[in-house]
Image (tube, each protein chain N blue to C red):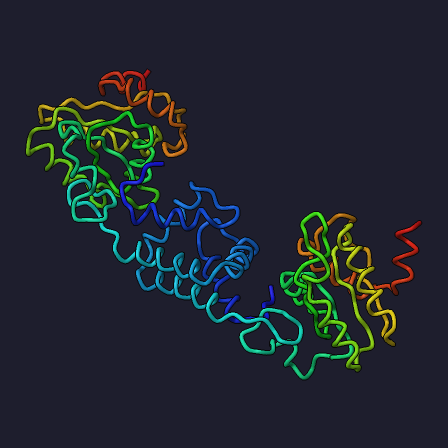
Length: 208
Length: 208
């Protein structure tokens, strides 16, 4: 594509660097912004820059946060005895959107995936064990996608938590095997949260 | 969707305002940017803001420009006796990408479309007539999409330019009727530029 403006070309290049945005789409977005008020565009650009500059991760659960401790961990009406372990912050958002869960979270920051070079030491597993070891936790819910890597992660975590007096559960298999948690509709996700099973059932099903 | 961070929520809202970007895509983009270097994200945001702040429109042809006169009008090797009339700057980019055209442009800023409330007075038609009236122009190429509105615009312009000693042509009908110019592939677009027809042929074909 040939642009007659360096300003446009640079803006298109920036948009085209985003995932899933090709050069034609990038141009469409740039031309749209070109037609907006200057104030509106500068609000757009400032909001993005501020998000990146000020975003933090919760000291306790590693969820995204506007402060040192996230709004979920800080909320006194959330039950601290239940920890829902998820792969990433998208999964926190997905579960929060069901409005069915009132415990707290633990964001692993990924799942064990040797093919992608992700081992347990790159995930926030030690901090989860520490939270459980400190006591006050009755249940750890594994809300992890039922894929090979997810299963590996669940088994690894359950081994790590084996010696603590804590119930380990997994969300119900309402989600198809191989599916990604974040794409599940809210109904399915809500149902699989309320039908969660003790880990023994999960192991039995898996090996059957 | 429930976010546990106001910063993220605001950034998602800004992205979701762009055309063709839903909230899930917006979140994906925000989470992608969150993982980038702060310098990279601030370059992204500054490039967009600068584009909107500094972009201008060429005094002569109304194309986007980084200065008062665009790089095409300023280029001494472009033939000023041929003016290619297009609907918008996307069409300029599409034609420039064929690398087959060495004249100058005139961007109308739209086409006559009574249903959308766009009349001739909202388009840069007077400045086109003025350019032709000033002399030195041999040919005006109508590179306008062959739709009902495009045809209306071509006929309106040809009436306006009737009394000047200038050849009026249209790009060849290589583009399917009802199609949009900007989506044509470069080969088709290049061929339809080189096979352009005198307006009489076009009128004959249309009324046949």
